[in-house]
Image 1: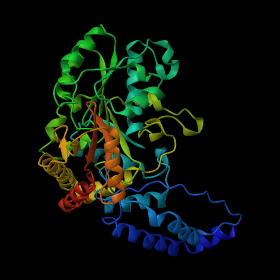
Image 2 (image 1 turned 135 degrees about the horizontal axis):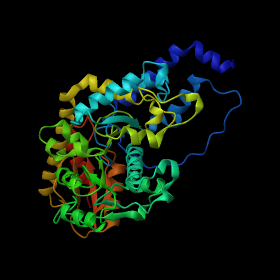
Image 3 (image 1 turned 180 degrees about the vertical axis):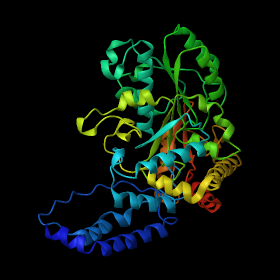
Image 4 (image 1 turned 120 degrees about the vertical axis):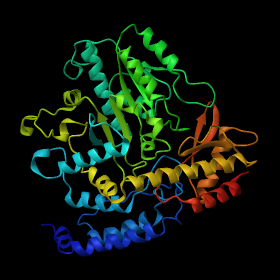
Length: 462
């Protein structure tokens, strides 16, 4: 055995303790660290011949990178809908790496029970019926990809074609209908060969809305004259967290042939609160659902789930036919249920967090984040520096600057705010207006963080 490997194996316990000690300053200082920093390119290191050993490599990492890491999983990173890492999920993630199991193959360990059990608890958290099976993916993009891959297969079956076997060329171009689809859905359409250009944009409701106009959807479906298609509905748009009326869309399934894919990447967590659960009425009529775990579940990257009622189509699309894998049997190996062949035990951090904090814990996180967004919205409305461009519906405040407005001015303000180091937000465009998103989804965020952020916002405004 190579001398550095042998030495590190002998001192593994000490190395893990050193790693824990190196982690503690970051975790203890997360409230004081800047949530984002400017990128500064470094010259690449050259690989050494003999290696440094793990202890010296840890020192090198801390000096070169670790001491400069931003607190993007802290309480004032509001630029993306990104949660943090709950204490329990950090424990689960550490153990995931300790065990280092490839969870694709179900027959050789107890581990598949963890994912099946976690999916069961998540169904309860989200109010999904037992008709839905689920599997973990790397993120919302891959979850949307999986859902739309099954949708593609379903459309083919309406023409008595097996797309996964015969190819997409055997049927006419697949039509996709949506009003405010996330960019990851367009990416998935490109990867699946359906094509970004085959997305027909359905008009939205009037006023400050991003939700689909159901009358316009019905007209678009009627124009297809019975041709099957895919409808992508939003349970929470990224700019203003608007929800399509899932109940009304579901009712159209009795009249028209379409696969309903619901992108509920973070809006699905509205189910955690009695105040907001009604926004998801009708979701159980979906054929596939995307929900992102490293958003409001507050588990580490990378983690999301795909839920579907169509296990047969799921296996048809994702089955792996390698002879060394054997026949498909129950429980179905995860290798046959999602795009990846190799997959880490992503369910374990979620299992830890769900068991540690339960329904009440997640209700608290969701309602506290929503309250912070609402309070920020009230502060903006009372201000002469900023104004809301849309109502605060859930956990995102979408606003812009008062005065002469252009994208460059918004960019300058956000750069100044990032470099100030107290809060981080990202730009967007809402109904043609350069705007800013403040997204609340971190379990640590409290009212004191709102006060710190507001002071930074007012001081950085010019």
